[in-house]
Structure formats: C-alpha cells, structure tokens
Image 1 (cartoon, rainbow, N blue to C red):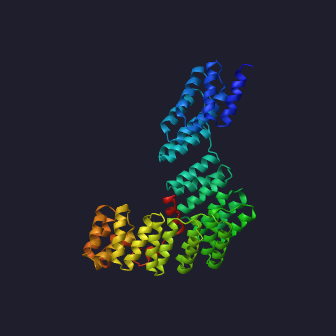
Image 2: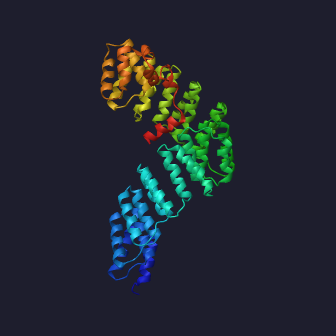
Image 3: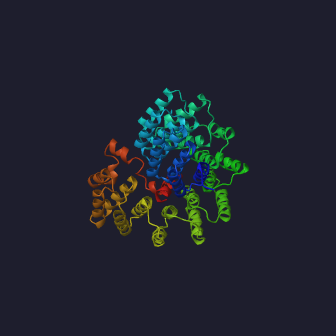
Length: 474
C-alpha cells in the first residue's frame, strides 16, 4: 500500500518521540516532496526535536515552510522555540521570535515569559528581565511557582539576596505552595548571604509541609551545618533515611559535618568507617571533609591516620584531599612528611592548585625553610598562581626580614610585577617591614586585619572552601 498523509504523520510523530532527528529530517523531506504536509502538532514536534539536537538551521527551514503554508503555531510551539534560543544565550533571536509570535496573533503565556526572564537573568541583564516581568504582569499574568523559583535562584546567584527572600515571602500572598526546588533555592540564598539567623524550626518546618526530594534534603543538611545547628543535621539525616531515601555523597558529607559540628568526633569516625565499608567507591570529597573537620579541632594525627589508610586502601582521593592532609601535617609540625607528601602528590599526576601552593608556602615560611620557600615561589610563578593575602604577608615578612639578599627576594619582586602578590603588601613590606606594617595606619590595619596570626592559613579551610576547591578542579 502506498504511503498516505496519515502514515507519514504517524511515522513523523513516533520518530520525534524517539528523538531520532536524522530519520525525522528524512521522512519530512520525503513527505513534503510527495505533497503531504504535517499538521500543526506534528510540525511542533519536529521543531522541538530539532531544537533538542541544536539544529537551528533546520529549525529555521521548518519555520519557513510553516510560514509559507500559513500555519499558525500554538503558544506551546512558540514557547519551545523561544526557550531553546534562551538556553543557547541567543536572546536576540528569542526576542525576534517573540515579535513573530505576537504578530501571528498568538499571545505569550507565563511559560514564554519565564524562559525570557531566566535567559536575561543568566546573561546578567537583570534590568531587562524585570522589565519583561513588568510587561507580563501588565497583561494580567501572575507569576507561577516555576517563575518564582527562577527568580529566587537567579537573584541569589547575582547576590541580590534581599530581593530573593522577598519573592520567597511573596509565595504565600499568591497562595503558592513551595516545592523542593524552592526550598533548595531558599537555602542556597540563606547560605550565600550568611543569613543563619533563620530559626531552624522555621526552615525545618518546611520538611513537613512539602514532598521533598533528595536534593532538597541535602540542601537542608548543608544549611543546618553552616548555620550552627549540627544536631538538627544529624536528626534530619536519620529522618531522611527513615523516609526511605538512599543517601548519596552529599548526604554523607552533611551527616559527618553534623557529627563533627556537635563534637561527636568518635561517632563521626565510626560512621565514616561504616560508610567506607559499604561504599568502597566513595567520592573524594567525603574522605576530605572528615579529615578537614578533625584538623580544624586539632586532631591532626587522627586525620592523617585516616588519610594514610585511604591511600593504602586506594580510595578515591584528589588534590583537595592531599592539600588538606598536607595542611594537617604542617599544623602538626611534621614538616618533612608534608614535603614528602607534596612530592608524592605530583608524582602520581595530581597538579597543585592555588590553595595547595598557599598552604605549602605559608607553612614553610613559618618554618623558615628558605630553600623550600624559593622552590615553591619558583613553581608558583611558573604556574601563574596569585597568592592569598595571608600568604603574601607571611612570605614578604620572612624573606625581607631574614633573607633580604637571597634570590627569594628577587622572586618576590618579579611575582609582584606579574600581579601574583598584592602590590600594597609588597610596597609596605619593602619600606616598613612586616611588624611595623601592622601599626602604619587605619587603611593598612583594615587591609591586614585577620592575617597577623601565625596559624591563620593553616587553621583555615571550611567546607565551603573545600567545595570551592573541588569545583575549581572538577
């Protein structure tokens, strides 16, 4: 039997559902050559399929056919196209399609406007995004939960935390019930803005009201740990498991951070051992967090013991793990072991990151090991790493005070010229020396505040910083 319109249309729709864009293109070409034209629903499925593949040339060809045939796309069809161009950061084309949509007699809906607002927010064109929001509301369209979530998340990412919280509060006025995504965005906003004054009962009460997913539970665990409510984190973890959720690496990090925050260190180590036994392919971040928490409270030897066991057991460890272990060795005064571990890390193919260099240089300046300091400065300069303020102060103080004629002083000046050392640190250190520097004026005192203690760098490294370090090498 010869193919007819119905058989072509059915084939086209089924291929679109399978995301078989190549076959869709072939069938559509044959169909049009034989004088059969898909209906509007089939055309929209074709456009969606091509958009998923990123075939924008084909999308425009199909739009040309649709225009020639005088077919009007639905609001869903237009919205899919606009959303795709927003995702590609082609906001010019998204705007062009919006104009074509309106001219065709099709009115944008909340979904259409949400795509545009999200696109402009991600492009850091927030004034344009809010202008679109005003236009939408002027047409009598009220934001839905998805748009509220987009606004809360986007505003949080650009540091407009008060506005993000205002939108969250506005949910109740619109009689909208928050979902897991809302909670995750809210907790991210609170954490990034350091708003840890929210009562845990208020935040935790949302757990009862909403049907949360694992991501939301993990966000809540993270918030409780950062906000100083470690016991709530442990209780939430147990509640989450009782609800039938299978914990992942973020859940384990939350649990271990909660136990350590509650100073239940023995229990934390026992729990960690149990996790390792049941999850041998554990992510490096879990190993790193327990080591970091122990080091921060002075349990360096115990932390190093866990690291040694992890290396023997061939657990997953990354450069962040090694950096934390090196910091623990330096803090414990095991300088030779720190130097050896640093070399071993490079030998197995892990390249030091900025924090590794800063920890090493700070530690060896404190130990007044000029040879190791010179070696590290040479590596830092070759890698183009910008030193942290505390490290810069420690290095310039040590070199100019104790080894002003060494090659290390020339390296420091060269690093300053390359922008790897804050210029104000170098200038003040050269003219005044480190110790008088702290007394030279309010501006300099403010600049140096928090960096004059010997152990400033060796004591640092929160779970936030570990996450940032991990993200930088991911």
